[in-house]
Length: 208
Length: 268
Image 1 (spheres, rainbow over the protein chains, first blue to last red):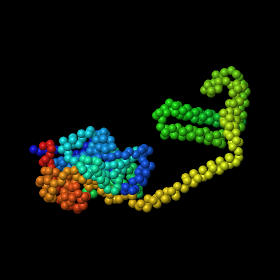
Image 2: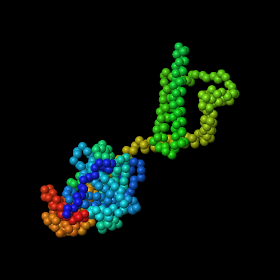
Image 3: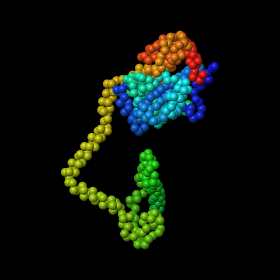
């Protein structure tokens, strides 16, 4: 008997058809303070939020095409907060006129039974990590500066080790498809972080 | 000749009155907002109100300085009739502020000196100034001047501070490491370098659909880099060295892997 087909098409149409515009970079631990200082000056006048999140990436192998990935995230600092389920589409990086990587993005809040639910659906955990850092905002722009940690014992978020001596810096905007002016704003913002951090459009496939 | 001057005077008085009325209206609405909407009032809108007021004051100043405006200073107002009775017309004109045109209030309203309260304040200040004596005053003036010049210097020469700062940055030199960027992006993108959660089976390349698939199944990374020889290193071990795999071969392997995976699909 054939297994029922698993939809691997990205969700389109309706209000949830949002694109994520993304630029990435990193900063060494010793330069982190300068970067945070600069971000405090550049971003909206607010207290930057600290966060500690545990992200688990689930994989469902469809019949054809690429495996289907879902990212489940929950806060370690606020265990009662809802889980966050995220689907990310294939990144589009080819367009030279666009200054940022663009990918389909669906965000959903979920209850705490999300891992069990995904397991029942046939998803299997592929990998997990812990991210600790700070979030800044400037209008629609979001800047996340975070340190990634390897989880040494699966599921145990207490026992972790840092992945590298740098912090990951991500500048992102969520916008409906086709709003390419966003990438202009992002580029000018990224310019202001130079030479501390070089935020670039990085094709993850190139580094597989 | 005289008629023309009179006309000019009248016109400028009229425009002055209308501008003052505008100013009064803005002040009025601003005060109303401050008193009644202070909970919703945002700082930018307060600033907007101030900007409006200052703009209106500026136009009035410009009007008074205009060449065509006759000098109001040269005009003399003489009270012709004083009366202790209430004058309804006057009360209406002044919005109930001046109901009577009597000997008591006329000197205050038609005076060319500052208001009595202002005069009183000024008197107090001059008494204060006379009290401290010239030596102490001189000292205070000097201190204030010193403070001001120090402050000005600081404001005008931030370059020194900035230079030391940028020198410090230059000393540290690189604030980021491109290799780290790559590693981090690869890690969030598809879990490269992150410990795999599933126990790896001894995968032999080129033998898809065999034993290991039944126990573990390919992880994402295995699927994507299958075909390169880095498979055993991809799991649990250190970051696998990048192998220049042949794209054609990779493709075929992915297909087979997924097919075999669908065989043990949970829905079945």
